[in-house]
Length: 263
Image (cartoon, rainbow, N blue to C red; front, top):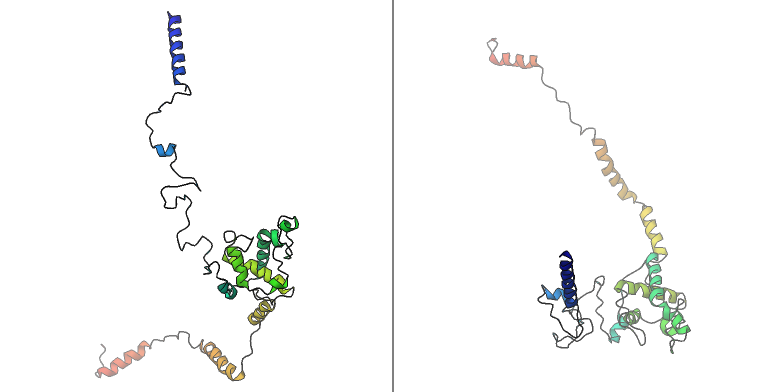
């Protein structure tokens, strides 16, 4: 009897197992799903067609006037405005550490084409990948180029060079340009104007440590004004209070009475 039950249970189990398998050609309905959008995503992948927008593009441009994080130095330059490029400049000045950082950024983003020596002999050109030579920043064509034109090239790109606006924020762009101008100033270019200068820190240190001499006509009254409170300080101490002798007060009251009786 137990053997028959076991056979029946095993048969039912096999039947249920076979029924649960997908036959391949038979489309089975799983039934209702709770929160189906969590199981089957309704999002659109980037760069795919999207019927929800007029241009059918899923990837959207940022809202007009949006400033990316870390780019809070607006330069107000528009692409193609070459007249504005030539007059655009900055009041930023960089110390030795910042100039070193500018050189580091140049080697990361620029040296691959322009070369670590700024001579246009970068690895890409030297390997024959480019038919035309990148800009040689030591050439007379570029040694006197306005800094605004260089900045615009970094921000918007130039010829074969793409834009580096997403890789470098506004301050970093000027650091790179300052580094280029520093090298150019040492190779026949314009005098370097983006650094603090070697004499400025020394002059500031001298001004901080050397006290200027004071004229005699001014120093005497000031000395008096300084020493007078010091001399008057002991006199400013709280004076001791002496109470009148009791005998004197007693005598005075007797004289005021006039009859010799003590009150």
